Amino acid sequence: MSDRISALISAFGVLPGTLLFVGSLTQYRSGASPLWVVAGSAILLLAVYALVRDVRRLRGRTS
Picture 1 (cartoon, rainbow, N blue to C red):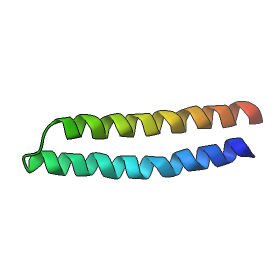
Picture 2 (picture 1 turned 135 degrees about the horizontal axis):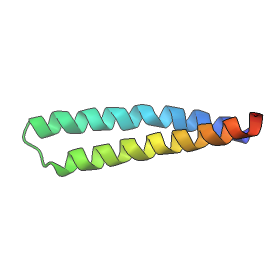
Picture 3 (picture 1 turned 45 degrees about the vertical axis):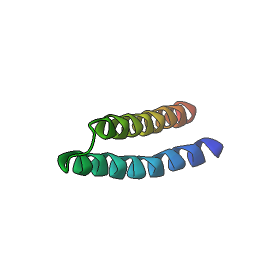
């Protein structure tokens, strides 16, 4: 049960990561530092990594 909850939280974590990445791209196009894009992409990649890790753990238990 806790693995399902962890996967659900990770799935909901990808949405803010995506929004942060899109926002950082918008700010960069407006003249902000390119470090925002690096930070936004790093957060998005970490969120996706956590989701993949949780889904693999969840699939490993059910098979």
